[in-house]
Image (tube, rainbow, N blue to C red; front, side, top):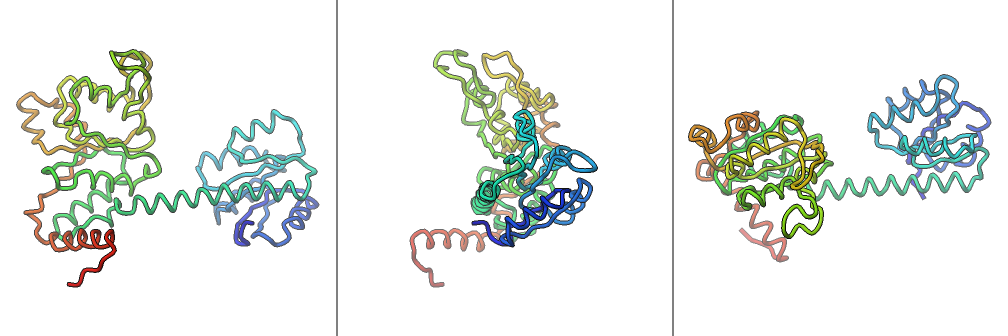
Length: 344
């Protein structure tokens, strides 16, 4: 049973229907009401409900107008549509607009309560998923990175600012300095945190293998391609793609990466259909890319596309202030896993 503080906004202009629903719910829930689309907008702006009970036949505008507005705004609540129409087409339309359920007037008390229970279960699952996501990614947030030194505090300050930007970030530093950790923090703190974070180490793959890894391949594209395989650009859609050790890519592969950066489109290996790519791109390298550009091993145009914002992570030997805190962090992890206490 949903808790009493589960908030429901009823948008209904008929007095007898408002009274009926208030009677059915019988004080079990926190119930507010609005008599028009305009009043509903005001109430949602003042306080977003957990559930919207929406009549379609409202005096100022159709209820579908409000439903479309709520979905475009990506507000996090469910909608149950109430209608006097039994037309299947109308029910299909509102479900396509994002309604969770559809109930026709007149309805039985049990039908309404069942719809509300389903909505509450859906709401609870989203909250639980959000809680688990928060716990899973907590160590990757900026606040989870050990940084006592002024140098690392500066790195994290830039990372936090870049989290809410779509700008491409180039993270540089020696191997083991934590480039991927910073990339994950940018993703987890940002607007794409609900999307996937997909990382690929470009140094692990040769040219042909890297192309398949990044862009995927069609069935039969080459010997051994027995089925369609999505690449990292496709898997990262709506989230972040992290190209680690991007300096290890060939000039030919750099040209293909540049095309995706510029056009937001690519084709799978062996394919002809263009696929849209909505990804935030982060890249990292331990190489001196400016030197690589001068010596013709890295494309200048791709370098400037990747190096929109640069974060340089200093090696640990240049920030000794971080060593005690890192030692304590690793020791705490070991003792917690082993179930023992460390007495200093």
